[in-house]
Image (cartoon, rainbow, N blue to C red):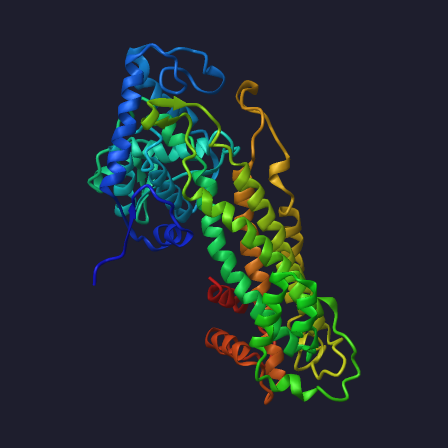
Length: 498
């Protein structure tokens, strides 16, 4: 069987492609047409070098120093110096998967032939990806506007044989890692240092990986909702399609239909269909299609923004060989991604928040017409059951609320005021990764509580899809018959949701 690979041909990458390279180590190659495009753009840069026209980043300084002309004999120093000087990141290193995503997106952007770098630059990045040479990149330092400058500078240092890198699971100097992998570092030529640093590749990498994680969480959240309805012996009348059709919200209709399907065949639903004194369930059950549907619709909307970025050129200045022009602009600005990731964090808050409310309702045993004991104990008082699981979800939701503060609305000016409106998209991205982990924990906790509640309802069964989730959980989490630490159980379910 031919080994799977991804070919960079100047086209748009997909989210799944980024995930497979970043997490699965799928090999990457560059198409001949992309090599030709890069070579053509390079010719335009070379012709500009022969003229006396000041061109940003090629024969001028950077940022607030853009009015400083650079002599021809110092142009090579200019490119390496920008990489070294901009590698000012701090904090814990980014996860390898994020850095690998950055590398892929950087190489893909260069391959679109508007950055003016030599083909060897993109080719060397691809060699690093395939040899599992991953630069160590501090997580803090980007304001998400003039590209993810500091993180990309740390990436570029290794490309140039400097900095530090992981070779597989070994940490070593960048030059040693490149040598061990048989890769020759580059010496950046004119425009190439800037091309390596200008771009939204950190933000876009995190966003692409986040969408894959969020898709899994959303799917699990809908199943968890169905499970909780049966765990609480709630009613399914709120899922009637007629209710949702007259609202006209497509996300709401989709979620209601999914929950109905997940509960199909439930004998728990039919067991209390008559003589149940309850008229309505709490909002967290009854309005779950409205809340989850709104969150999932918001996620779907921003998916288009993130997908567009995976096919973008976010360098500056940009080279247009057909017109023999190099034009300065602002495609490096991360505001589209910053706002998108702000909205994703808000959506995740609602997915987790309503799950916490359902979980608390079940554990409280306030479910009238239900036979559950408080906190799903077997010996109330002597045992606390799953009482503290809800404390944990409350803590997660509180942290997610804090993380939901939009990063994009708080500007700090940089570079002596010439870069005076920044997106803070990298901050938004890092907060998003935290929110995803917290949301996953909350949904895992709801599933844990739901599975234990189903055990109390036996021999009654839930719907087929819910029982499938139950069986997957019971493969990694044994039935609980007495108090034990729930932490490991929550963690085991989290792994199922990845």
